[in-house]
Length: 41
Image: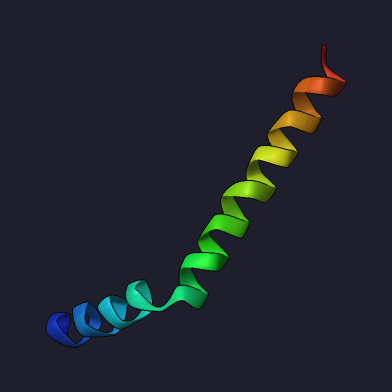
């Protein structure tokens, strides 16, 4: 079971689509953080 999960996560981590999603996530988080900081300045 754990091996299967590791294999699946390995496939997902290798795919550029998932990597793009991760960068999109961090970008949106940064934007939200910047917006909050800007609002409370």
